Length: 111
Image 1 (cartoon, rainbow, N blue to C red):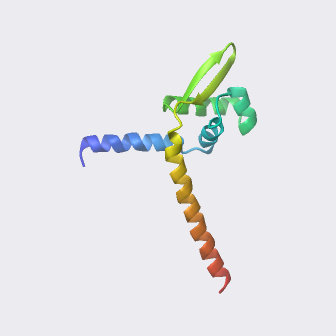
Image 2 (spheres, one colour):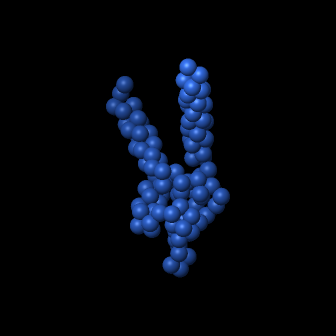
Image 3 (cartoon, helix red, strand yellow):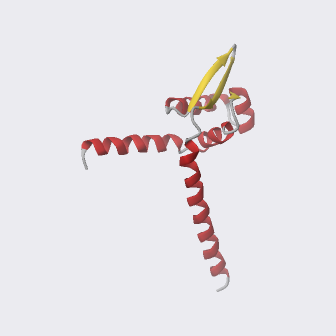
């Protein structure tokens, strides 16, 4: 391993760490269908505006979201749908894990 490799792993880890919050994943999932205002996101996700603003800033700084302002309303949308190329395999791994757990529980119930 080189120092360069360490830097690449750090960048990847920071990226994944930024995604590792339920509210941020909810925002990404909600914006899959298109642009939304901060107010709409607050209502749809049931989070406080101050908390949501912090999460939106993290996702924007990460390059996942872009924003635009129209008068006093701020709108967010996904910069690139490629984020789902990361999230879909994660969901698939979790589905497989759940199935294995269900099978284990079923076998325990038969004993």
